[in-house]
Length: 219
Image 1 (cartoon, rainbow, N blue to C red):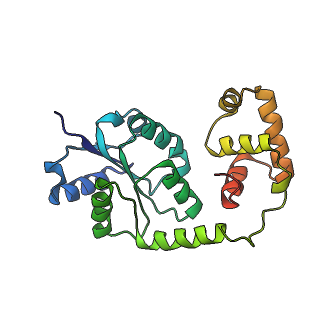
Image 2 (image 1 turned 180 degrees about the vertical axis):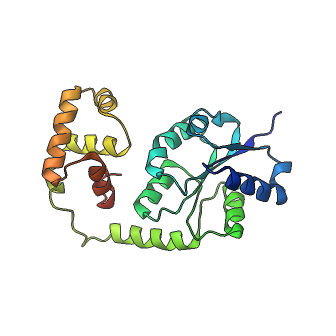
């Protein structure tokens, strides 16, 4: 039976080779073949069924652009253990990644020891977060659950359908995909989107997504 592999993705070949050599020096290559992927085309076409660990080095990339791929991979193989390396400290983004099903998040202050711990924890089916990020995430969750925390202006005016559309926009779906998912016309989606931005006083889609996540308007 073929061993499941460790696939490492990143857009810097030298860093990929360093990570591969580090894992090799710590005995991982004896248990799993290690493959390196350095292009967007390759990462979108990987056969996730053959992967045990998928390590995503997103330190120089927009994490939000990988949400849809992560959903796809976990749908195809719920057992794949996804480990994300990133310098992004936005705890709302990090929480969404764990909600989707990643096993580890390693922030910018992560050292080699924590990198090894994240893989060992993931192998046991446990979640791992580096220490600095863990503290930030804990503080964020506590503040979100604070009953005295006020909703942003305009949020209470959004209808249930507008909230459905907003959630799907934040998940990265395009207008046509939202229309198909909600069984409404493209024109209706655009109308809802205009109303949402009017009520929240926002004039472009990227700002809308950031505002919704920053203010916990979406799940």
